[in-house]
Image (cartoon, rainbow, N blue to C red; front, side, top):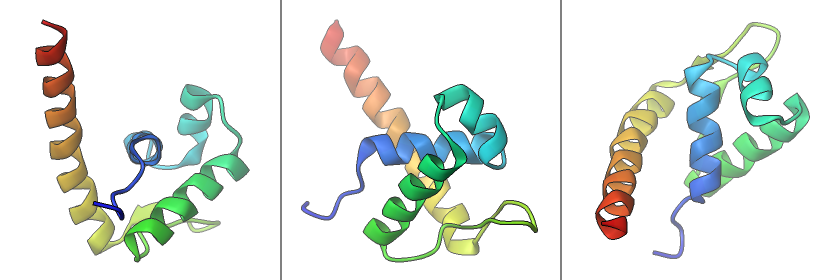
Length: 88
């Protein structure tokens, strides 16, 4: 369990994907493009592969990034359900 991705990094990644890039994510998270890039790079380093292509050509999830994102959504939903159940 030592190599689990940081939940904050997962949340930031999810926001970037939701906005299909950094622009909308910057506004929602109140973070600079540089900070978002650093967080995304940290997540990619943590998981050991490239999650998305980004740059002048735009934003696009890699094939592994797409699978990772789908699995991550399931995990985040489970965490949310756990949090709700714990609060009750």
